[in-house]
Length: 309
Image 1: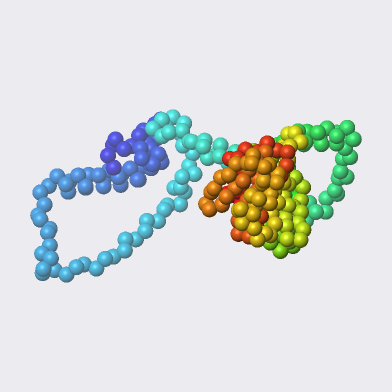
Image 2: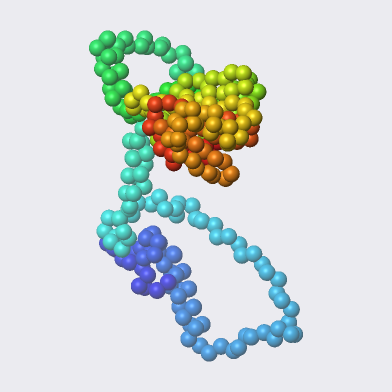
């Protein structure tokens, strides 16, 4: 061992690496070993390289484990004057103190045990609310709800199909009634003519301001239709009856007897019409037509009535 690896303190020699004191016998051995190693490494040596091809691989021998001398352990007290070594760390002692100071965590109970203990715990009685508190809570809940109006379904929403059918029926009835109202005179004349046994007709034209007055009357072989003014008392009657007369017989038997020679003659589509003082007479198809009344009808109005039958 080199001299720089030996430290002398108060006459005592210490190993610089291990810090152990060195005895005189061990110092002599170390000095001898150092001189021998230095003499070997200073002289020139012959190469000892082996020829691997000619030599065999030497068998490995386990090196004997060194036996520690008794009394040479690390329990020897160190000198306080040795400054080469760092002071002993206190982390280990601090950790052990921390472990001792921290309390142990108690064992947690099993979840099943916890639920069982909770079920066995006494149940506290519910707190009874005051009437005022209940009222306030009800008011707050009512105000919190959205104000949506719930419309009750009425009969029309519950039965839309039935309402549609009824509505359509009413419309059809109204249309039918209107058509019947319009054609009522024709229907009445048709019924009356069937009863009278003649082919009577309702005129498609009648003077403005006049309308059918009362029901259509009939008798033996004749049908009578009466018209009255919408304003006033003027009226006229259209009579249709079976007859075998011709135009000359009508002129002699009706017109001249009533008006003498004060009459007007008009012909239209082969029909000769005699008009006098708002009255008229003509014959067509075996039916005698006569107009009598207080209405001041003109010859043109009488002609249009005759042509519309």
